[in-house]
Image (cartoon, rainbow, N blue to C red):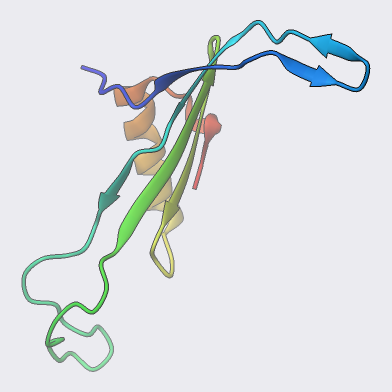
Length: 107
């Protein structure tokens, strides 16, 4: 079952110089976000000691755009790095669950 992430957004009439242009297309936009802050004990991977607590929450944010049959998803993580194998898995999961082609997902 696909989880909806897009909401309708209707463009309005635009005035340009000495003429008016009517843009007659339905454009949908969504801006989902979520906390990806780990829970439980956290261990520093370099010195192998526990962190006392989490100072700042870690977020993932996205911008989903759709016009007609074209869907695009831009994703931003509060991470230092994301491995390419993880990106490929996430793109495949989003393509399967949201119907957005993997090559239309930018991370």
